[in-house]
Amino acid sequence: MVSSLRRNGVAAAALATVTSLVLAACGGDDDDTGEPADGETGQASTEFEFFSWWTGAGDSEGKQALLDLFAEQHPGVEIIDAAVAGGAGTNAQAVLTTRLQAGDPPDSYQRHVGAELQPDIEAGLVEDLTWLYEEEGWMDVFPEDMLDLITVDDRIYSVPVNIHRSNLLWYNPAVLAEVGITAPPTSWDEFLQQATTLEAAGKTPLTIGPSWTQKHLLENVLLGELGAEAYSGLWDGSTDWESSEVTAALDMFTQVLSHTNVGEAAADWQPALDPVIEGDAAYNVMGDWANTYFTTAQGLTYQTEYNVTTSPGTEGVFNFLSDSFTLPEGAPHRDLAVEWLRLAGSQEGQDTFNPVKGSIPARTDADASLYTGYLEMPLTDWNDPEIELVGSLAHGVVAGGAFNTDIDSALGEFVASGDSAQFASAVKEAYENTQ
Ligand code: GAL
Image 1 (spheres, helix red, strand yellow):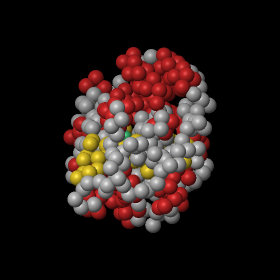
Image 2 (tube, rainbow, N blue to C red):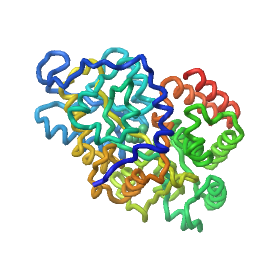
Image 3 (cartoon, rainbow, N blue to C red):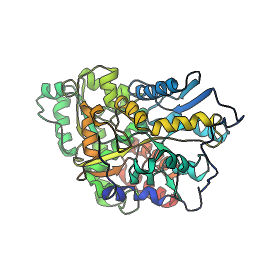
Image 4 (cartoon, helix red, strand yellow):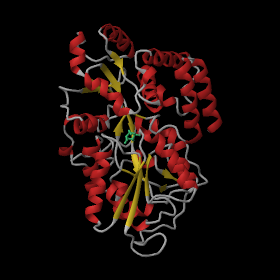
């Protein structure tokens, strides 16, 4: 059994940004209970709709395992899997916003913990689940820092189902061997040197996909170049976006991008991994959902047919994100939604979902024997007090709402122009306008 996840230290610093976003004026709605009734009719429901962006290979298997377990526990219930395709939820989040604004919520939906969830809480779109935490004894099994990310005014608003790691460099060992590279790069400078060798041999050094994967790469180049403390400072105003260090890190991002296939960027994260698998490219920076794509979808063997290490310059740092499930206000089948959340937060639910999803449980009492192969690494690192924790930008931990939207627009222009000064000033202004 895993004894405990960390409860203080760097994690608290990294997460301070998010906690500071909490508005004193909202939440506190404590009219919620676990009443086992349909939200509309008071009768037991026979239908349940779960909304997520887990559709393609590598993303859908974990969700399916959890939905199957839920179906087994609720025979006769029709399960509607309302997933909208597109990694990191870029398309799904737009569809969800439209539905929530139209008063047409699903029974439960996926959201990242942290800044991404805050606007929903502030707008009163999700129910207070504190009573469920008390009923299930969850206050003692989720790490305090994790609970802070989903708490407003002492009320808790979602159920975290996992921990994913963002700062990973996936690679094809055969490609490295073919061009005489003995080990993956430990800094972005070293990556640039290797890129020359790889390009001379006709290989793409690093593959990339749509905008959100470019943002995912950006956060990890910033982290690798600036270090954990200065990276975290980007999200709480303590690191100046217009400093020479940040400008240099942004210029490094532009250089790294020039050794990718950004001109013909893949449609999503899975096709971005394919050239690595096929031996046409060496590296890809992606979260650990990639492990499920390599193993379950492609049948590859860890460490021989594909391998992974921390992204350049981030050894000793865990850049994390977490998927959580909510109970929307007005959920049509609230009784089943509550049962779904009970399952998602349970040890059985988390140990069913995570080994298949390529993540580790958000709970502290996982059965460690289930987390084998690649998954041993994040489980060990997450529990190692020497490892520094920071929150992901591309997956909702450190920036949400209008700030995040402004970063997306500025990044689109930055990738096209390479103008780091313009990007830094746009993000700085967006930060100041949204605090
Ligand atoms: C992340 C999400 C992961 C995985 C990934 C790719 O945002 O947290 O669970 O689904 O996107 O779609």
